Image (tube, rainbow, N blue to C red):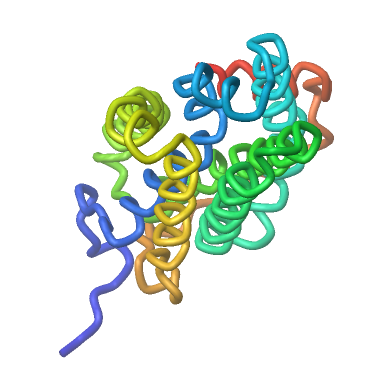
Length: 228
């Protein structure tokens, strides 16, 4: 059987084998922040950290994700979407497990949020590149929009964890469960990304000079995107 040429690939094609792990990677990467917000009362009672302290560690999470976004975007461009998704999911898994394990120590508890924030800043550009490479041109807008539902999904899981997990077996198990989900996401990322990409006919490459947008503005926009 002849292999179809790149131009023969339908513009409506979606490689779900790659897209679903990408969406899941975004969800698990922001779980440290949203699980902590949803379980603030239980966590505070468990480790003796007040609402102010919990607000600080959540702020650390989003600050790390904001500052790391430009660097992680560059990393994804170099290593590719599959490695980016896999690495961000592994980082999220370690962060979530570390938060549960280091709970009695407030300093260690907060330190894991830095790793979690970097995982979130890596997952976003990796997922964007996945949609760009693995979705046909006529479905990219739809899938880019659907990707933004991944963060609200984490908010939903954070709220659901209160009655289902925190009030029954303890808040730590919500983070252990999130860590397991992140690990499963990392293992679900395709090992041969080229087999799942949608190729388009070659187009002329436009040469560009030095970016005119200031780095500070890029960081601010990245932070706004993460918070949105």
